[in-house]
Length: 113
Length: 115
Image 1 (cartoon, rainbow over the protein chains, first blue to last red):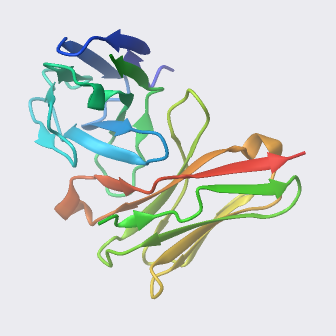
Image 2: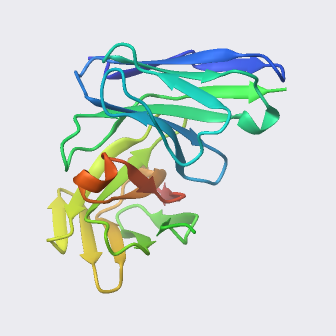
């Protein structure tokens, strides 16, 4: 009964390094999302996907790229990490129906030094 | 311009009393509203929701009220329990055919229930 799994849970990077955050869901959901949460703030949408092979920009997409090669996986990439990208990143998925809530992973805590 | 606002960053109540968390929105096109609950080091989990065609939805100790004319919704927890201590996020969604399911989240209210 895994739901949404995020890998890794913690990571420390140096400025300029690259990395990929992995999100996997086992609920056969069509829609997947990546959010970031900064202290005292809500969840801000980075990118989302409405199905395998599709991606779209959210509210704060700059500095990030995503891919959805398989329906169950949604990858978030940072090509050249910056201190402003220090945050907690949450992945979520839902069935794509009108009134279905999102299911969230437990987050990835990313620090950029 | 923040479309969903939770103006109280924190709320403290005594165990057994009522907790009332508030949320205001600016976009009259929002037609579905959700509350999520988040414990430290965990992701948000869905708590309760309400469609814009209703003004109240109840689930056990949790009730959400929607006042469309005031663009305001509230979450009532009665009676409050220490295990309810968490961050509560309000979220709002546009009609699905215009929004691809995206929700706009408020900044959250941290509820502390004291024994």
